[in-house]
Structures are given as structure tokens and as C-alpha cells.
Amino acid sequence: MLAEQPDPRRLDPEDMSGRIALVTGGATGLGRAVALEFARRGVHVAFNWFNLRGRDIAGQALLTEAEIRSRGVGVYCSDVDIRDSKAVRNFVGAAASELGGIHYLVNNAGISKDGAIWSMSDAAWQDVLQTNATGAFNGIQAVAPFFKNQHYGKIVNVSSHQSFNPGFGVANFAASKAAVIGLTKSAAVELGPYNVNVNAVAPGYVKTEALADLPSDVLAKAEKSSVLGRIAEPEDVARVMVFLCSEQARHITGQVIFIDGGMTLT
Image (cartoon, rainbow, N blue to C red; front, side):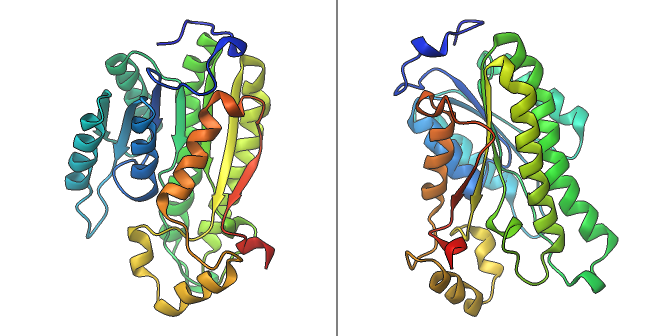
């Protein structure tokens, strides 16, 4: 574990082993890829999960936990609704106690409930905003006392290319991910004096379970709109997120990194 007030100039930019990361929504998809990438780098991992209708997230959380543990690092996971600020604070405290601290936060958990503005229900709007934007705020607020006290921390928030180039029917999702960008920049300003870096990534389409719900023509269009001619693998995004937590990125803060294969260029 790091000293209470580590000097970033003395940290090995290549070595993250022994540090502790918290990943929200880490049981599946992109969150799982991030958690496994941290574990590969020797980082102990805490992650939360939350059951969604029609999906066995609890079962997948057990599989992810086992795979992280098989890589020789500590792991702590729990069923937590990130919309509940008290539950998030309790989770962060328990994870820090179990693993010996916390150094990195990845706000990955998010949902989508698409629909045209004129037919979108109040619940669809509120659920997406509360999960994607308020959930990220709750995570940052919960780790801030730890990071301030140790004068060290890294936060990476997951936004989306749709914050900048939204398609049809994603007003709630695009608004929530745009809010994440504003939150990222504000948190970078407030936590910077405590040696805390806060950045965001804006992925394009990523090959996760969520893509199974998209029509094939949408996926074909996504591949065409990428100047690289492909859709990202989860690892393509995860590696950038872990990089932003490394000392190699110690002078990057308040930024939004596009990981979209050039989709926003076309």
C-alpha cells in the first residue's frame, strides 16, 4: 500500500502492483475488462454489481470475482445500487477496509433506456440520469475523503461519444454522459490541489453484452463510421482507462479521451 502522502515523482510509472482500484459495474462488459486489466497489473480490485431484469448479473459477478482472484490479487465485491449515496459510501469504506485502502476509482456503471423525447417516460429519464450521472457523483464523493487524506488518487469516468454526436432516441443517455463530462472537469479542479487526477473516456461502440440488443444495421453503420473500420473490443477501452490511472499519465487531468476508432471524425 502507498504511504499516506506519496511523492508522485518517486512512484514507478510502470508499476501499479499492490495498489487498490474500485470499479463500479465491474461484473460484466467494459467494467469486467477494466477490473481484469487492473488485476493483470497486480492491482487489488473492488467492484460492485447490481441485478438487471432479464440478466443474471449475480452469477456473472461470481465468475468475475473468481477470475480476478486467480490472478493472485485481492478482490472484494458487493451488490450495491450506485444511485444510493449511503450505500456507495458504505461500499467504499468496506472495500478500503478489506483491501487496505483505495487509490483508483473507475466510474463505469451505467444503463440506457432509449426512446424518442415525445414518448420517453419519466422513469426512463430519471433512471438513466440517476444511474449514469448521479452514480458517478456518488462514487467521487465517497472516495474524495480517502484521496484528500492520502494526497493521492486517480479517477476515470465513463462518458460516451454520444455526448457529442447523439443518435435518435438517446436524449436521456446523451444528457447523462454529457453531465459526466461536466462532473469530470469540476472534480478535476476541486481535487487537483490534493494530487488527484480526474479524467473521462468517451468510447464509441464496444463489443459488450449491450450490443446484442442493437439491430444489425446499426452495428454495420457503426463499423462504417469508424475510420478504422471496426468496433472496439472491451480491452481497447480498458487499457486506456488503466493507463489514465498510472503514473505515466500523472500530468493529465480534466480531459476527455475519445476511444471510438475515429467515429467522431466522420
